[in-house]
Image (tube, rainbow, N blue to C red; front, top):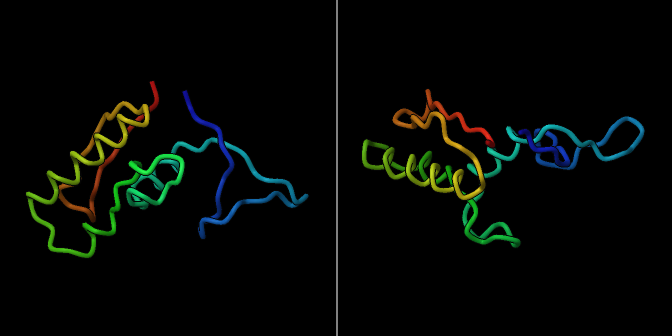
Length: 102
């Protein structure tokens, strides 16, 4: 089952059609991206949403941090209704994350 929502541009602005209408479409990839990039407290509707990936990108990253990040990502995705199929974040430059909505 795929989610449909309003789409955003690469700059995270609302996307519009050439006719000036809001663009809607398959949004799972966008949703996962926003979940990873935002931190807890940034979503007014649910302050517990968000991984805050930037914290891991801007700090020393080793096995302990990778394990913590993998756990946080899994918790956030499961909490949002995703089934995690692959979650390998040991090396952020070659991260593998795959999740689907059942």
